[in-house]
Length: 206
Image (cartoon, rainbow, N blue to C red; front, top):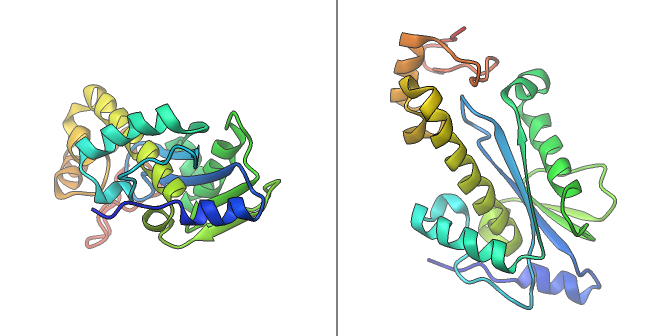
């Protein structure tokens, strides 16, 4: 596994920026559960080895790295964008809104922001939208790990209330198991009603 370096953070620090935040989300394509957005300001004096896009790591690796991030980061924040809010404003706006909120909740406010893919407007500091940022930038990779581990744990908790959907297994994404349960039981209050569940048959539930 290739470890993310702090090359972007180091270059920005050389340019005079000291609190560089990475921000990323988890659950964008899910049919159930909230969108979770995390923001992280890493300490370049205490680099964390093993950082990478959360989707490219095993659960064990993500859980171990989450502990290291909380132990070494200068600031970490997490926000949830509910299913209701996603349905009201759309997933694109929900993503940007979540990033703004996560950044605003950091205990130490950043002087530069790197986001994964999406530009975040309306910030009080310069920012950079980096394509595949979670695979290239340590701070964004850290944010992706925090967002995914938090959301995965949340979906396991929700599975206890909605066991018929198998949320602990697929985390709310549109697997065949999930689509079958939607056909059988219909949607619940944690499902995103504006999403089309089965793109092949254009099946909508609810």
